Image 1 (cartoon, rainbow, N blue to C red):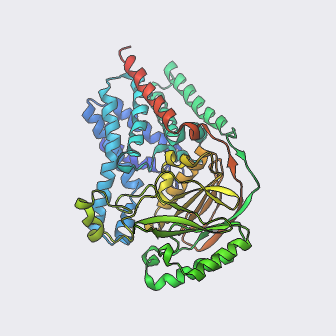
Image 2: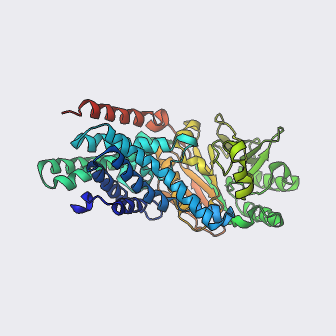
Image 3: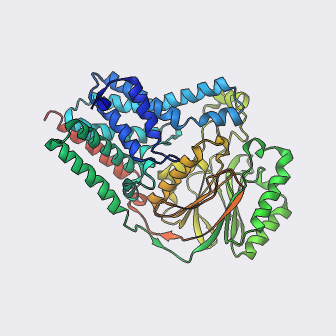
Length: 496
């Protein structure tokens, strides 16, 4: 099949572009498998490790230029960066991310494993290790890990409670390898075995989806997730502050839910600057509902350190969660003496130098639930979300994806949250400024969702859950051990 074997840069870049169509909002999840099968077939024909690295880079460039091109919107439309500089920065970012598929291609070729062992063991293991490395180095950027493309419609999503998103990525990679083998072997005995293994992998995932890994705990609770739809370009305009406060006061007072959740930094002022009368109104309303309100705002402590926080008002004693995993350049300045000018002079990002709240933060005891809060980008890191488990009964993500306008970033982000629900066996509640505000079930499926870029309140009955999935107990250790084992087996059997 020339589609799989033709060695042309255009084919690899186009395949990277194709892979993005497996992710939300497009959701054609088999395309991600097909795209990776093209890359694996190309790697098999590489004449050197350098050529394999170049192929991986070309594939990655198509994947990330299309898949995270929304970075341009944040830099240009809201960061006020010149459009040429924003375009260059976006392409440079895509090129840097493409180095990880390039590294995977180089390493699998340097292992000097050939034939079926290269295709079925070395390539899938190197690909997923590359994803894990991308999600770990320099604070990590695991966006577009291929496992996310399978949440939540694909049968392969059934592996998430066992192995997490990287385990699902491994199943995608193994499926791609088997598909590439099938394309080469056609209907020979080898091809028939590849087809049987492919079907077994997908049927196994479908069967795993029928397992209830966690159990309901306590009575359902009525929640309200508020979507204020405040445009990013006016969010921190002092002249709009009163209007924003009144917007959320009205939305809160119109709800009778036990748990009311506001988006990330919904109130664009420091917590200590919030008028006492305003806090009293919110507290009284929450107590009248027999519950609590979670409010997103910045905080400043006695040492004049600033935090991105969610704090509580209502029946429960006051508590807060301070964002732990901060975004480089967006929320803190790496190598401040060298790069501080970038935030201060090139970008216009409010509160661009925050402090981490730390890893050891307990779930919030509110509305009869133990709520594990994460803020915005934090839900991309499944290994960090599980720190609050099994104590937490609900997951809540407060976010503001208004930075990315009408792009598909918000839908990709919501799909990431779907994976967190699958991994943990917990419902995920998302309160966002402009969308996607949603309620996600323990099976990763969206139960309810508000339209984007509209003001609204999503009201729902949700259930707390107890217990642990295998992923909650072991994190990424299981899949990492499996990947190392695959490489060891490939290396030991390379000459056979």
